[in-house]
Image (cartoon, rainbow, N blue to C red; front, side, top):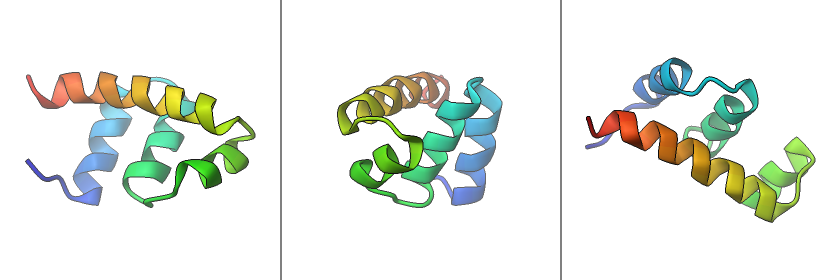
Length: 66
């Protein structure tokens, strides 16, 4: 199922409780920012940025498939 950017933003706000994780997910899913650029923006390594994204996306995914 495809979601509009508006729907994605709403779902992220509703189900992701960490402000950092919400911002990172929105930047990746809605703004289509690459991990290297996200890492620089959030001042993390690329690997740590990917780890945060995978966990937050996994949490969101659980709610999308209920």
